[in-house]
Length: 629
Image 1 (cartoon, helix red, strand yellow):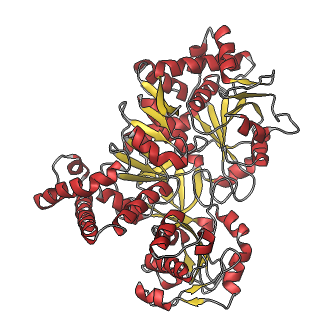
Image 2: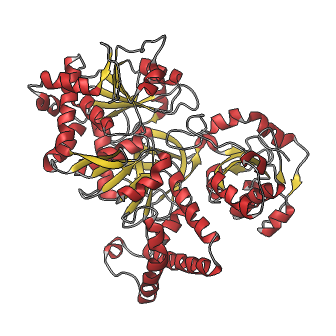
Image 3: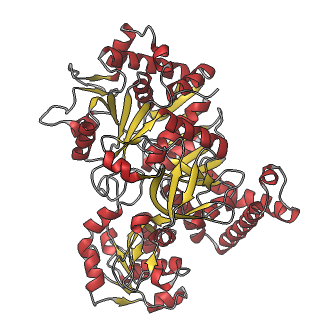
């Protein structure tokens, strides 16, 4: 029987798997756990504490914190009262946090520690009545600011008489959460998602993509304030009694993978790009024999994947579907190559789920080739979030899969992807105009350009507003070109620029670790900034751009490469919390650099670099404020 609300869904798992670990987290150097029973008791006490302090149905309560076990405790406690959870990205600046708190009319807020508390203080006072801080030593409590333990104590001495009756009355139509979009083109908008919106998405994913199991372990590292992690990394595993382990941070993911050894990893393309880059680096720095074995193994893996694509759904599910000539070679390739790549992810991964941005098809095919299925999907905050995804038994690299079985998806005459179904939001909070603009004849307008292939798999071309129109009349979809460029192990991020220009240029940020390693072998010395002034380094990076974009039409290939001597981060505003590049921020921040790239006459003729990768065109290398010629 389907759950009526998210609280009921999780309560069923808490009852069935009471002694099993719900969460794992690192403390004092090792991972420790909490059972489903203890987790649910904490939810009950926190909910009772909130109720005693006056939180009631439809009140808004915010959470400002990084991922940890207290996050879902607060989330479920809020929802169990019929109140509405308002997650806030922990990396947002104070003014944006303040805007969300005021716009959502939050009555309470949960904060991780004093660091985040300081983000909401105005003249020494919080902009809302009460803040609850997660456990922290040497913390001084006041009437309006106290710890989670104290709130739990309040709940334990003022217990519920009818807690279950209360949340049993919640329906799928009741509002569960308001999630604010990133606000790159204006003020953030609060997408109102109901219990039914998120439940229908969990159900669609569970049926269609990768069936979650009670014995699964997931490593949570994307921010829970983001709808993708909230649905796929929290509610989906909790719906079946799986275990969620919390990473110590994005920079510790590789280390935590080896400690936790997850079976499923939900992540964004950036992480998979890094794993791919590590594998490529291992090959490039290896002996000729190692490179030969690796390339042979990848070729065998691709043959297996190509064979898999020709199978029907039923045949793909059967064991031993490989032809004998592939099966024997595959066993050797697995022993000598695939198993080593799998160990980088802990050794137990049965599936990767990629969302939050487009995955480079070459990288997707690489993971399938080394026997690590990567299932790419597509969605938005407003759709709770998944619209389409590749199923495990029939995944097609280069697409975002097929629509979930409980959704309708169609392509408008202008190419925009339109969605209708139970996971589409109610609307934007206190913004009727934006809500009206987001819908047409009952269909949600995604703002993305896409097309279905002959088998019904969706391909996303780019954001509708991101299509670059050149003065020559040519249209360029930047995302595929940018994805190709970041396939280089020496490049972390890339952005294509060219609207109302004659040609496109590429802004790139180098990969510090790999570039320093390359420079050392070449006998080049100096710090990162000094290296970027070396002509050999400039030539390397330009050749990499040329190499990875040679398959595109000439007007899609960057004519100049601008090297940015700074890593792009969430904290500095260049990346979103889900690690996507904020294009408007990049265009604004590097406006003068871009201007120089289009107006500077001085350049290094890169014909030699272009010839080496057989693109047959001269690439100019222009330097602005962030670089030198």
